[in-house]
Length: 167
Image 1 (cartoon, rainbow, N blue to C red):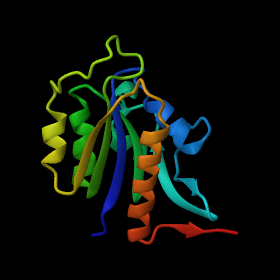
Image 2: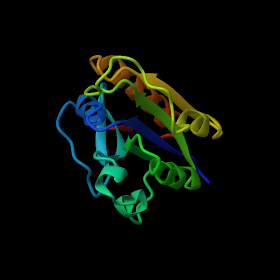
Image 3: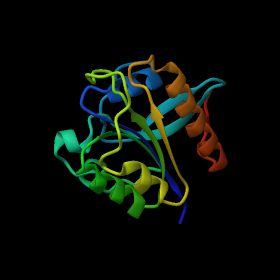
């Protein structure tokens, strides 16, 4: 079975999750029903499925959002609450490599200091084979973390022959 990729941004409400996707796509984006094109320089794009507005905030299981599609790359906002484990388990059970950015502190968090991982997400995610987890300051401008994310997507997609040329 071919591996898939989950790029997710974890955070509290108003932490900057949607701002991440706005910066990545260079425009306001909403959850769609189908894959969309993530454009790169040199006339290339990669098909991705975006879930902007976490399944937890929407109270809709991620499997219902994705439906019967089988996207190779999913970009997903995930709320930092214990119910998010169900979202992670969906992706793990469907052969997704996890690449996680935890916005901590988040943009609208009351403090400027990173909080302790009371939910154990760091250990949970890092216990999954071929996963990445990093903590990013959501109060900082998103460009550097989004550039890092875009480079990871491109490298993974290139390795898996998913980069598409256009004229």
